[in-house]
Image 1 (tube, rainbow, N blue to C red):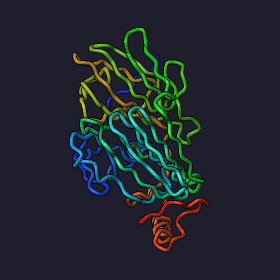
Image 2 (cartoon, rainbow, N blue to C red):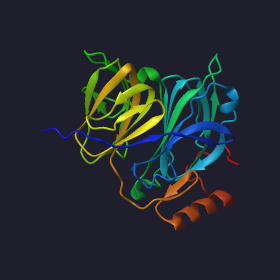
Image 3 (cartoon, rainbow, N blue to C red):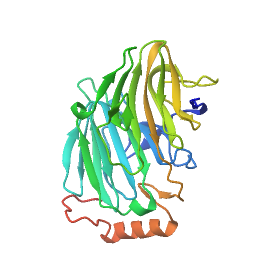
Length: 292
């Protein structure tokens, strides 16, 4: 018999101020007690007014993690210390592995109506990979598989597998699954998951029931944390539901975290910040960008 995941917790995202003054909603973050391992933080930076997001995220360092940015509306201009420059727009993904250290900036820009829509996920790296070389992937929306099921579900496969198709981003240490799923009104849908992997959903439109047991209903701006199991079963509400489904293999290691740097010990954190202050933080050769 297939073990269906139940809802362990429903959390409403909270208003937070980040970067140089970006108003966003945080689904989980610094005080999550590693409940979402291997994921550390999830931010929703959808906004209706440029003043809420235009100041962006100027030059700042990262080490020991991966940052995954997914855009629905507007654009994000980015640059980093490896010399990468570019813009990601609606449907695009930026998957950045900071590894042993990178300095970058991300500057949101709204669409013609002034709206911005995007999400950022932080994924941890195991101790053996924290000092790997940085790598950077810009994934255009046209590269992300879109599958429609006979009953009307639509699934964009950013990473992992769904409906027999592999996602656009592969060869990631934590074996993640990142899906953008839309269900029409009242549809019942089941999705296979890997036993032992932590999984959560972030609802971005409508409302749905995310397990056969109550209470399990979540709406726009809420995160659902699941128990372990081999599948999730979702029933869309009367207006349909759209959500991001994310899962990954837990790392199960100590987490020492301060700001944009995540290591395993306090001593490693101190080394990272000392290196950032004395100019030895970057380990890669090409250093065309500068941090402040």
